[in-house]
Amino acid sequence: MQYFLPRILALIIALSLAGTATARAADASGKLRLTNPFFAFDNGVGRGVLDPEAQAAILAELGYAGIGYSGTRNIPAVLKALDARGLKLFSTYVGTSVDPKKPKYDPGLPEAIRQLRGRDTILWLNMTGGKPSGTERDEAAVAVVREVADLAEAAHLRVVLYPHVGMYVARVEDAVRIVKKAERKNLGVSLNLCHWLKADKEENLRQRLREAMPYLMLVSINGADHQGDWARLIQTLDRGEFDVYNFLKTLRREGYTGPIGLQGYMIKGDPRENLRRSMAAWRKFVARMAAER
Image (tube, rainbow, N blue to C red; front, side):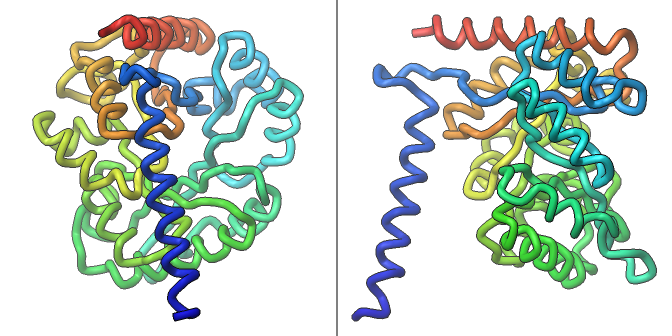
């Protein structure tokens, strides 16, 4: 009996936390609120052009909660710049592979994990090296994510799979499959709007969310058309045919309360102006959801 009590207690706490997270999608009156932290990908904040201090200054000025970084280099400088502005490093995007002829992950990852210890930064992993949405290299995929998750666990960090069209983990379903097999508490999935639109049918959104929700730790959005190339599927948040507002409402109804990142890959124009437009659209979404009965 003594053996089972800690496990029962852990289950009760987990269920309680899950219920709290769902409840926080709405206020005491039951109305939905868009209170998720909103950050920007560095690919829309002058990546490779602006230094960390300039990026942090723009994000703080415009009201973003922080940034999603790419890679494992220069992390101390990024953290210093963000800390000075009261901003957060929400994620860093890291490549992994199931190709036996290639490194399993970025060789700089162990040192980056040490630098990020206790920061609540998510290691956001893409995965290449196999047929997109295939299953023939799942054993290798599970081994890679377990290894990274175990390294991250020691530093109190989480690991999230990034479904990316054309890669081995190409769809939300692929990420969920690998995470289930890997069985690590600090391992989760993300839903990236532009890649989901490219890979799936819009009518499947609620089903995909319900499959992913037990593991969903990150979401990315942007303005988008319903289909097309990346120039159409990745736009500033105030542009595009796709109804991002209703996408966000669906997320909230399903209980998602985690961070939401702004994808900015290859959007033309001045980064600051693009970020300003997207933040203005986000604030309209927040106000609109708050005003609805």
